[in-house]
Image (tube, rainbow, N blue to C red; front, side, top):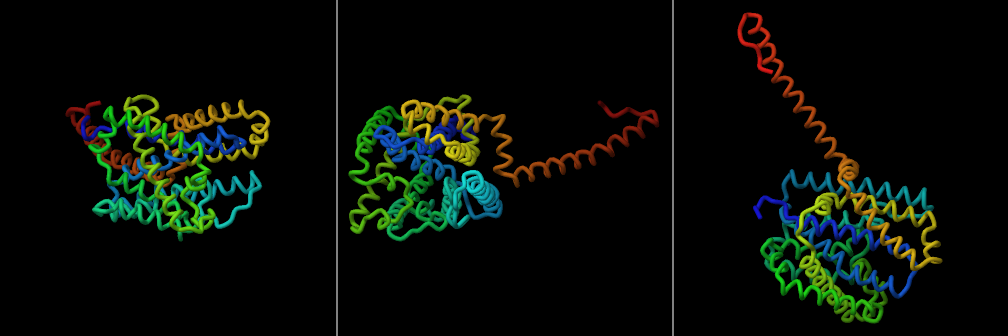
Length: 363
């Protein structure tokens, strides 16, 4: 594959992961049962770590330059402010919810943009650091003792090892996961995670998989036990993320092209999920548990694919990145003006030449 070619593996991975995000969030509308709780825990044990891993991998080129910092503001800070406001207004005025600490404590599911902002700023620090991954693991484990809710710093630090792991990855290292032995091992890993998450509440709890709460808030007075539990959760997430990348296909097709619009899917799907909640879907699901699971799963998949459908996604992208949209239109207007200014003298010279009997400007 040429060095400049876009690797379909990454776009397939991005689209698959954001589809799983929509699926996981949609499953929260369902009543608790052994089956749905197990599926939920299995998914959250590894898919968010995998999402953060690919985020780190795609952030490797970030440096402290004026252009990169402006892009960070334009594509992360501005969408955060816009969608945090829009989703909060939707939850307050449509859902009748009461929200506090707007912007300071990111509301569901806006934590990812807050975390992405800080992770990108940490990139030039951790990428060249020889023991960067070891430091990130130590930070994650210790952060569970002190980190709070402000700007979701607990998640920023808790998930930091997966981001740094992505920073340290290279195309050559990813290729090691594509070998047949690694793919066979990936199947074993997923089977192991499936078995382990059957008893999530016996060795931890679902809350551990969110990386957002302090150890004492989860009832852990024994710091050593809490530290070991966080280390175990990190290990499970790491193995699951590697297993996912070993098995994701590298074929190019319509699904691959949707991978360019994962942020659109992420930012817009929350309105649909919350809208279903406000419309009373959880109550209906309580009375039709089996059918509701199938309907929810199918609807979540269709929603993700619809939001990433290029004819729609390209228009929604303008709402996600309004400054980029404005920049493109201003640049286009400037280019048209420059082209017009360049053509007019040539046309005038041609007319004058024609009037004098010379050759005309070619059409």
